Amino acid sequence: MGAENIPRGMHVSKPLSAVVALRLVEAGKLDLDRLLKTNEDFAGFCDEFRQQQSIFARDLRCGELTMRHVLSHTVSGAPGERFSYNPVVYSMGSRPIAAAGGKPFSTLVEEYVFRPAGMTRSARIHRDLPLRPDLARALAPPYRLDERGKVVPSPPLSPQGDGAGGGVISTAVDLAKFDIALDVGRLVSARSRERMMTPARSSSGAALPYGIGFFVQEHRGRKLVWHSGWWEKAYSAIYLKLPDEKLTLILLANSEGLWWDNPLGTAEIEKSPFVAAFLEHFPGPRKR
Image 1 (cartoon, rainbow, N blue to C red):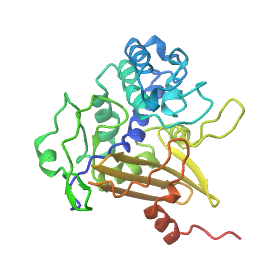
Image 2: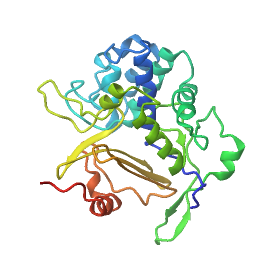
Image 3: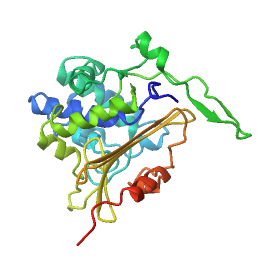
């Protein structure tokens, strides 16, 4: 895949969506702790979804959820008490975000993320928002391994809605622009950035492995802030920050090759062979 080919940055979309939410918080338009049952679109979706036979629908207490619970993946069981990665509910967070911003969610991403970060090779895409022609021509087609281990084109991808959990295509260079813009304060304030990279805590004070839009973990004394991406049999991605060391790793693939079967309830990016090699190559400052 060439440097200018564009894989879908699926699931790496979540930090970008979190930036939009926090920009609206900073503008006084969104309250992270307001009950989402006041948003009819989200409430209706949640009540319907919780009846489905999905692992992501189990034990949802829709009437008790807030945007903070959604953005920190603490929606399962007693809200805010435990982490369980839930891309479906996170994606539906676009509805109250769009209502607070007064514009379609994809428009808000363009306005609050792509433009200020200078991400000219990135776009939102969903069933009602086709990709502009120049980006469509550069879009890297996905591949998978068949039953014989042969590389073959992936089947057609299912259409999606305008959700906060996916729907972004980008390049490694453009995501690096996002990373820089986030660090220098062009996207959100330093306080909001710190909130993104600070673990959520349960009522007992226990640290959970997710902040706002990012996984957060400690590994051998090093703080790792990251997100992965995976579309089965199609795409995968890794976006890793070591904020204390000013290091970032960004990998995008038009296959499942970057995915390492990360479990839904923990943060273990060090188990990715790519990340393990990166951490070994950049061992961090020596302790005195």
